[in-house]
Length: 78
Image 1 (cartoon, helix red, strand yellow):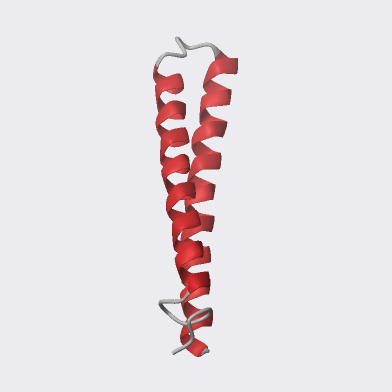
Image 2 (cartoon, rainbow, N blue to C red; image 1 turned 180 degrees about the horizontal axis):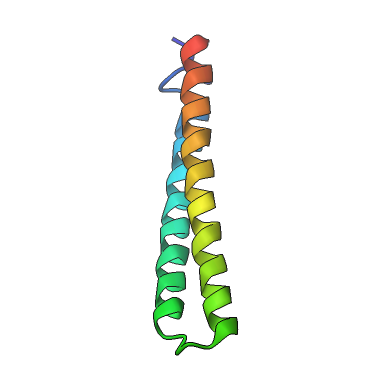
């Protein structure tokens, strides 16, 4: 059992905390983008900006999930 790189090690804990914080931030940005989309009033610039926020938040969530999968695979092989 490795205290630094193991499944319950320091690196795993740090990555989990960072992923959790980034996930919360992405969900908040997703909610703000949805709110901006709803209150845009049909203005094409506002709708475009809201869609971009939603898209970037979703891409961020996918990247966070992929990082967790990669981290678990790498730590599982150690």
